[in-house]
Length: 353
Length: 244
Image (cartoon, rainbow over all chains, first blue to last red; front, top):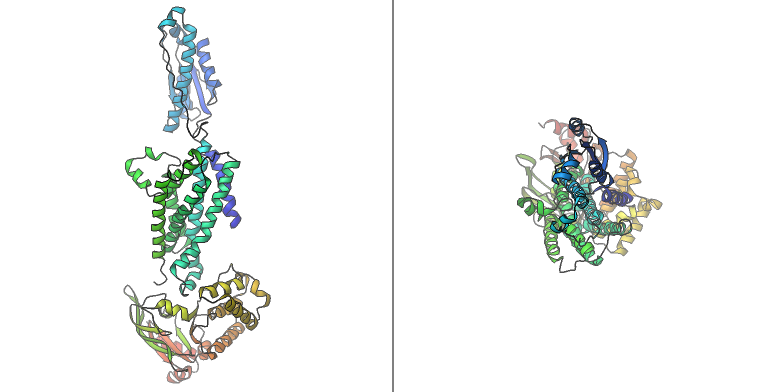
């Protein structure tokens, strides 16, 4: 069992960190070119040259293109109207139509942005080509915003995801193992034996917690090493601070596991309840979706999610170099949470029924 | 010395909702006695025993075990009793030696004392190298003998045995009872539940529970005379048949 406890999360960290990407790539691009001029071809070539779009089809009519979209063969249809080049040259103004498969609304939004960027770029170059010297004076100056990205300069999503996924794995494993622990002893009968001994409740709980607490630190260390060595995630802040925070965080998770354990009779029940919490914790942690975008009531619910604080702390410390005072709000809430959870765990463990 | 009571039970009752598992039972057990606690499955033996060892709270009645009240001082009782359940309850993934150290530690024995006890135990049971093997890999007979010895590790006043010989062969059962006799001779009180009526004959006194009540309590000899039976099996059948 011990090797499994370490090998599985390492595999998950390596695989998931590569898979959990928000970048939209390999968009299946198709077009209907009614114009067939050098201008229309130049526009299509621009899409072809982009790394995001993969030109897979050229349809003779919109009807066939729509059929392909319905079958899911293409994501985007660009329709270039007849007289595209002529209108551009004469009126300096024309429309093109773009159809995007928007089943995944977020992806469609991103695709729309990419398409607009390419079309604008094409526009600018076309403008320059069409300009006459007299126009030069009247052309308004384009205002270009130059973004500067802080804390994750290259917009590498792995830098963002790896600390989060690491947190998740540490949480899942310690919660599941501690959740099943006392229940297992109930099943095999050793718990009854323990209840007949004069052992004190707190001694028993500490004895149960401590090994998993250490295990949590080992997992964190392995995960951080992989983050640094495999994914080259920057660790700007003080690692000691992450460990200090983790010491309290693990108490929350372990207390929760023991609490669940006390209320269940079989490992299956304990597993079922642990999963219930883990899924909510993951999806409401701000790991995959920003908490700010959730409805107000859901944002209040996330206040009770310990994973949220751990994700925030690791990202803050690793990527922004946050110090002790910066993580103080998260740390305080976590400590309060730990006291409550372990209080409940000790209280709910009854030697006498 | 031998004549004072280590267990005194008066009208002890346990109800689960409307169901009365143990219905106002009363009895005493003397120091050094081997007390057989018999009854059919579901008669309330285990529930009664759980109240005496302080892991179930009685609904009403009075009970003192090793001089402590089961209502107010269950943790003090636990210091003075040993318990061996029908479910084998040593840690399978620890060696015999580790189990001894672990349970010795829980009962607050010093390291030196634990070592001394362990050496005694190895010699008495003829454990030899087995002491370093995982408990899970041992045959059931061995497990039960070790389990009993560990229940005696802290020299308790009373040892509670819940169907200790379930599933073992007659030879091992015989050996097991020799161990029981030996510790009873040393002054340890034995409180034992069993399904084997031949084992009931080994007890000093026997109580038979039917439907939550104690229907008979006497020496095996007197019980056989009273119910006009050849052996304890017949006594048991006569009593249990009257139950609903």
